[in-house]
Image (cartoon, rainbow, N blue to C red; front, top):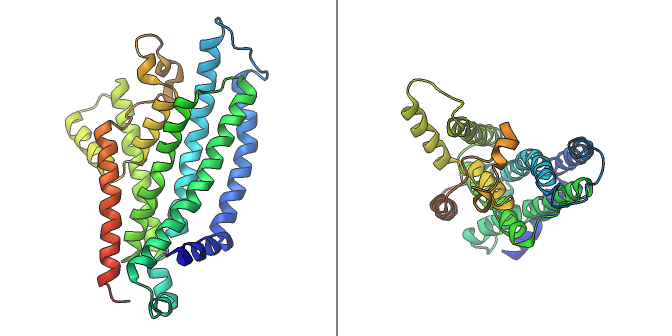
Length: 289
């Protein structure tokens, strides 16, 4: 299993998806630097009792915009690194030659899964740190460790979800079809969360609101990635602790933090990932390639 893990890393390093993600990230860092400077007013603000809320709001806006891109970048790498994990290798004959050796199928599957998850997790961690460093340089605001660690964990929690879904899809769908399916599913989850956010702010008033709420709830259950992202921002900005003292969402406007995953949804997401992983292992054991 460790050998398969290492081979997965070597394969990912050579893949074009890694190069494309790296180019996209560098371009984003450049744009994010100037965007953060523009929002912060072009200078580092000294945090005083008078300017504290202003600096905090600006840093929250900068980080919200940064993680808006960051979520898509992490999802892109997680989906397209594992999109051909099963059928892609079966079509080229690689899978048959590997499984002919004395290695159990579940160990091969777990090695691949761990390789994909750990590879994307390292990229996501570096991206997370870089966004905070750029924000700190421009605003002078650095968040406390008690907020940073839980939010980082939630930022990384999307990775096993996306990799598990993609690998299960890869057991039946071709790499191209699986990539399209996962992209549409992730986009549908994001759109459902956006609609829920508009409904929560009272900006959306249409007939059949109950049906729409049910639909967005089902979408969130199928793809809770954006709900986890909103919970990550909520933990980072301590929204629950600030409620009643300062309304940060009114300042963030369109990028307000709404629809954050509840504790029940976090538990559901963990069970969902475990069920997907178990399903993938079961399919791998029984499927003929």
